[in-house]
Image 1 (tube, rainbow, N blue to C red):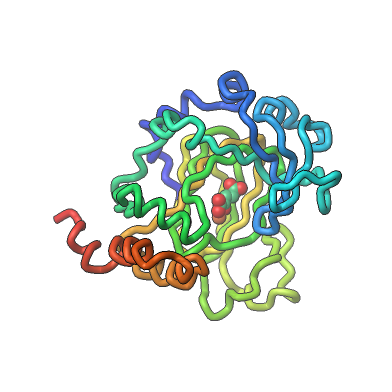
Image 2: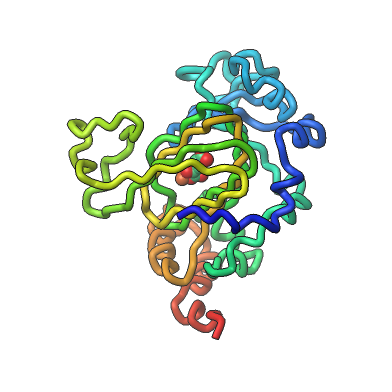
Length: 278
Ligand SMILES: O=C(O)CCC(=O)C(=O)O
Ligand SMILES: [Fe+2]
């Protein structure tokens, strides 16, 4: 579902652009990443250089290659020019920019917005995931077919440029071997479980917010250089599914009992019902 009026009050829509980021934060360090779920390291470089060279091969970027554990390497594994996106820890480096995005639609009760800071931190640590990211993507960057982690709701808020998104509703029994499917060139011989299932396709533009229901599969192609905020969250309706997924994480079993109980409590039906607006 695409909301065309969900971001009208977001200062980011006016204030953010590749040009403004290059001007204000060009010397920030980050990684032009190779691969999405097959993360293969990338080019450690500056934001300014990444933006200045959006139309040039990745090998011309200043800096050096790193592998998936972050160590310098002479050459990257695989195709060096097939970059995914630039990862820049924007909200920890510049917390004031957090005020430029939101509010998210009030209709959905985003449980992550009301978590105490310690609980939010415990959740990120236990699940080894970040739930709010900024993607700076080159034209033709492809995010391959996947469903988002832990049965969260996904949202893509488009700030600059266009992206084409193809989606398919989740289907638990059949979805174990979906990775690798290419909806731009579907091979139903290799992926028979996908046959006959609907694919939805649309283009998001600046000001559009796409909401991706839990466990829906999706593929994204940047049609131009593009700025997107990706935010995953839970609402009361999928809180128990989210909690059940968190409880299967390795980190959950390794975490201290106090940390586990912060999460258990925050997403328990009693707590959520108690916090529901009357
Ligand atoms: O914007 C993109 O390229 C894909 C984003 C996405 O699917 C995600 O963040 O999970
Ligand atoms: Fe996704």
